[in-house]
Image 1 (cartoon, rainbow, N blue to C red):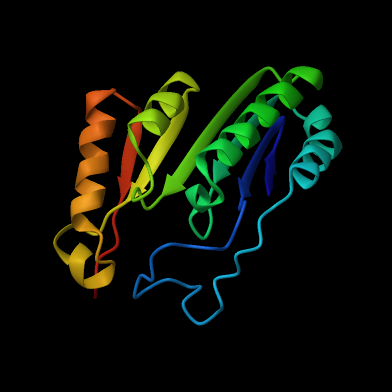
Image 2 (image 1 turned 120 degrees about the vertical axis):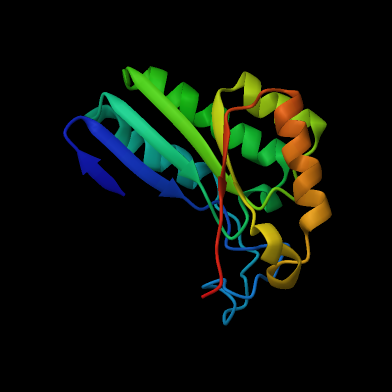
Length: 159
């Protein structure tokens, strides 16, 4: 969590679980815990912190945040929106950093409608070696373009 003036920037990890095993992942030597953050934990966090800020920026991260399921992640995004209204937050930006392999047509449309900026982890020419998910990620990138979803790619390069 990072505070700058009236802005709260926070990375929320709804789970450390992941459906990939990238060669460079900092969780690769752990058990990739499948425990999920509870809705109550999220609500409590929002209630404790949001009333102190005018702007909130959230990055949904993991593990892989979409592993919790589309409905669960949508619920979390909507809870944050409601809690921002309840606490008088003037500006909210929610972002998701994902490997892109679990996004589908329905969820990409939801992210677009919910104004969630999407970051896709993609390792370019090295993707198959590092992650073995190239075709699925490229399919997701095509979906993102189809719906004009605000998105960026995060690229890792071997040294």
